[in-house]
Structure formats: C-alpha cells, structure tokens
Amino acid sequence: MAVAQGASIHPTAIIEDGATIADGVRIGPYCMVGPEVTLGEGVELISHAVVTGRTRVGEQTRIWPFASVGHQPQDLKYKGEATELIIGARNMIRESTSLYPGTEGGGCNSVIGYDNLMMLGTHVGHDCHLGNNIVLANNAAIAGHCVIEDNVIIGGQSGVHQWCRIGQGAMIGAVSMVTADVIPHGSVVGNRGALAGLNIVGLKRRGVERAKIHQIRAAYQAIFHDGAGTLTDRAATAARDYPDNPFVQSIVAFIAADTSRHLATPDHGHRS
Image 1 (spheres, one colour):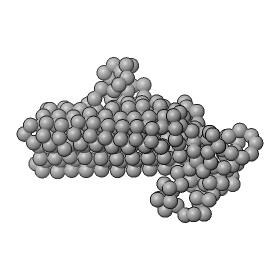
Image 2: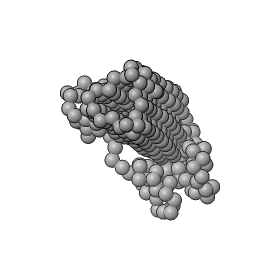
Image 3: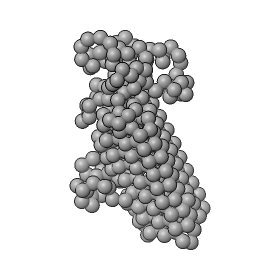
Image 4: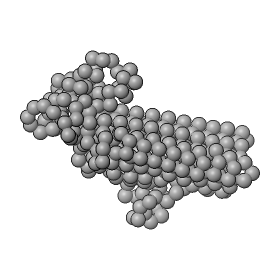
C-alpha cells in the first residue's frame, strides 16, 4: 500500500494492501478501498463509499456515501477478465451512484471524463464512455456500451438503452426512455423518446452567437422536416450549406457515423 504523507484516513476505513493514495486524499468513516485502486490528489471519499477493482480516480473528485465504484460489471458474459474503470478529475459522484468497469467484449474499460455531476442513485454501466461537463440527474441510468459526449444533461429517472450515443450538448427530459442515438444539441422527451427539437437553452448558456443558432435551427429543419431524399442526403446538403458552422458539422458527422442503433427522429409534430 502506498499512502502519501498528506493523506487523511479515518481509523474505521479499510484500505487494502496495494492501493495507491495520493497527497491530500481524505477518506472518511467506514469507506473501503480495494487493492488495485489509485486515488489521485485531493480525492475525497466522504463516508461509507466503496471503491474497488482496477479503478483510477482523478484529482479533486468527491465520492458521497454508499456509492459503489468499480465492482464487477453487471454482465453475465463477464468472466473475471482484467478490466478498468478510469474516472477523471473534479467529478461529483453523489449518494448511491454505481459505476462499473469494462468487459472484454467492450474494449476492457469504462471511462468518465472531468467535471461531471452524477446525482443521487445514478447508474453508469460497463464499457461506457462519458465526456466532460455532463449532468446525470437523480436516478438516471445509462446501460452498457453507451457514449455520452460533452455538455449533455440527462433528466431524472431517465434511461438510456445499451449501445446508444448521446451527442454533445444534448438534453434528455426527465422520465424519458432513450432507445436511439441523439444528435448533438438535440432535445429528447418521452417514453421511447422522440427528438423534440434542439437544446437551444444549452447553446445560449455556452455563449453560442445568435447567428450560429439560427443556422443550426435552419439545418435541423432541413434535415428532419423539409425536402426530399434520405436523411443522409439532407444532412450532406446541410453540411454544404453551413460549412463554417461547427455545430451543424458536428450534427452531420454524428448522423454519418457508424452505429448499432437507429437515430432518434421527430414525432407528433415537434419542432425546434
């Protein structure tokens, strides 16, 4: 066990031999840290948290009571192979959250970026890759093999089906069930959620200028509501029409990418 001098460990905590504890780490009452865990500088386990498996936790990340981090994946195909859970810096992992490592069939790792907020009772399954500045509201559940890009918000008690992609800046409304890929900056609501438009509020919060937002709206309208031809054809036309708008280009690239899921599209007359 390698424990830096500046670490603070409550006497009731259990730190197994082999764990690496960096300077400034604080481990509160009744926490458990497994033998293959690395806790970066300034990490805090508040109390009753368990971090195990081949798990790396980035600096300044905080883990609240009863969180379960790094246990065996919830996958019947998992046979004990060596896989990892990699968590970046400054994440807030709230009470009763569950985070799992990868499996051999999914690339052997799960990765969570930095500055994410995982509220009470959230779940991130095996082989998921999460970006940065994501908010998972209370009891949101992400199934295995999902990709969640930067600046996504997923509402409370929502679920994301395995293998789905959620594009950057998207917003999933509360109590939604997402079974299809969601375009960057899209807004999805409902059971078997349909694309309800664009996350305009998120774009404004990020400081995107009005002219660019107008272009994104026009491209969305052209791709999902107007014109003839296939959706792929319409997306390619939007890419040519707005070559200097990175948000439009990210939507088009997302649509064109290989995926095992179909794409969430509008329903019931929703428009951005």
